[in-house]
Image (cartoon, rainbow, N blue to C red; front, side, top):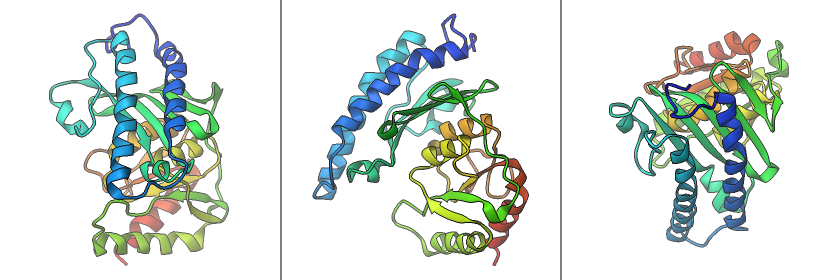
Length: 275
């Protein structure tokens, strides 16, 4: 990590250095959160934009202290735009789960990842409502509030507790909705429970903590999945696309699951598309 960051700190020390600072930013965002739904679409957008702009302004100088040469991706800039120019950069989402945040619900997180060649090597996910900070480094394991985490070794699909996410962003083409419903109807009869548990980052951390046995989502939201992807994989989950191939910028969906359940879930999810 020293060849990526202009600092003498190890990855573990970088995690520990930023942890309290990230908590403080996340706690401030929670204080700014509306207590209930704001009245109209313009007000919703204004509230979200102001909160995110404040968080970016608070975080950027902290990252510059670590390495002035590593950029922080700005709102509206897709990560793909940075990869050609920068081999490494910070990816920050102040509010993953914006709809919940804007409606006064606790199911949102703040995420940060250091990407190298488009892959996460450091990751934080902060669930401010519970004061829970998850962090991981590539090859260094994962912790939740400093406690080491690992997935639950469940082997019985009938006892599996899964998270998912609905097709989120309008317009929602009927083909996309139909594919989701086919996958959902294929999985639900096989498992103990299938639930929506908030944003992907939160569900992937719950998987890492042994509270879920798997998470799947269709679409191409790798931007949202990267921090939780590292956290889940460092806790022992298998993380792939819904087709079982490597998860990357071209993937259509994510499957993250405790290893013993992966073959059966992959068959159910991938097989449902052609039904």
